[in-house]
Length: 221
Length: 277
Image (cartoon, rainbow over all chains, first blue to last red; front, side):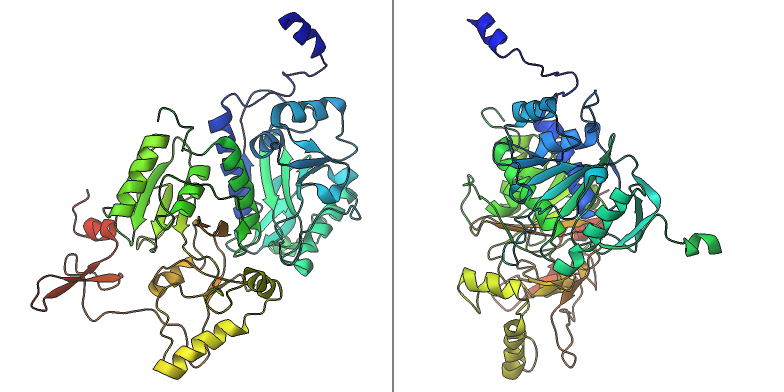
């Protein structure tokens, strides 16, 4: 009986590449607190080290975030360049999350700046229920607090710089997040992950400049 | 701790509340609906705050619980014991030593620091509720930023009493957008909401709403140019520690009109008196 079960379930799921949280209760609590810290202090980097291993293309920070926040009540949309049978299988196996093709239905959307299309109709919530929106989980190459976009607003004492890279995709994504202010309280929140580093830009954040902006302040100094 | 999950709530419920909290910090002052659970205590005893605390608490967090500023009153003692029992966490009465502080109706006098989380117990989260009983209407009023009636209510105070007579649960505007009920804290504590280095979370168990003020967020108490917001002040100093700048409770000492004023924040008062080394 057990043998047959194993053979039937013998799939390509690679648990070494897509590890579970070793201690689901306390590890997910720790991951959550990092994500909460990231969203309540936009642009501030958090280090997530929930487990050994490196989930392909995602990085441990975002994989840990998914494991900590997703369950059978959440719907996840996966961008084309991250989409793979093994990711779908791993996510469903570990969390039970439902995968959706319609971005407007997604609680979380997994994507990269390269594949980001500003026209993708993610849920922004309504004026009455702005919380019914999609949270972007964005895989980035770099996540540093210098020479980037200048963030201000709730959670930031004065201003904070965050650089997620200066590719066209990054520019488009940050432009889209900057547009959140015009639709506030509707909008989309973004959580960035690079390896074990995590930072976030919620819809309440004001975004100015960009990595290619003339860094007047630095030049003066 | 036997027979319970860590911190009492099951993981599914915690995740639901956690996802709600992330929305709450992203939309400061907006009331996020959540699937409130029945807790082993009656509504009105802080079931909202307890559910938030249970969802954020970690095994290595140090917890402080206060009720009207005091660590040693019924509500504070029972909630502290509850978490000692179901989460096995370390507890403290010292504001500076705590990572998570659950509070009923006060903000500690000791300035909070970055990294601390203050969890408020909220009876009625909707600041417009006594003006407009319909939830549908108040949601629409928040959506349309239709807050004129709130000023009318404060104005009626001025018309009747000559000053704004609202002394607790004094409405605030968060980041220039949402009008929010800061829970029944005395208006004395309202300035501490503004630009605080600590994260503030609010949970209403019966009404099943949670909301948040991220650190370093602008929080203004509603007022008028000619009737600016003012906090309470006392002619007396604390009878125990001599403080002339903390929130004082009046304590009746006999049946002959004897009374004294003491700090409502017991940790602050004891620290000042040097009782806590």
